[in-house]
Amino acid sequence: MKNTLLLIFFALFSLTLSAQNSKNEKAVIQTTIDCDHCKACETCGQNFQENLYKIKGLKMYELDEKAMTLTVYYNGKKTNLDEIKVAITKMGYDADEMKADRASYEKLDGCCKKA
Image (cartoon, rainbow, N blue to C red; front, side, top):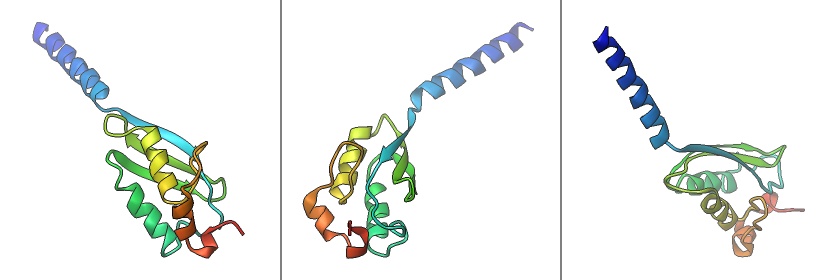
């Protein structure tokens, strides 16, 4: 009985410790997507995906072009929300209060710019 209690205590302690070590976070970022096919666009969509996944600690993202939001899932020990937002602005898109880098915006396809 004593060994069973000790084993249960150790298991709970291990779970708590592993939960504290993984700092998975989620954030929703308001962005600027000026067409309904940006995530499928051969140049802009591919560029967006490739550059987002270069961010160390970014696990995945969901782009909602209708709501103009980007939901990011990331490891908070490897990156932070500001670093992700800066990366988005460097791709030519706004990220919440941060405005798109002008030179990067100019490189986007015409279909992915404001009309």
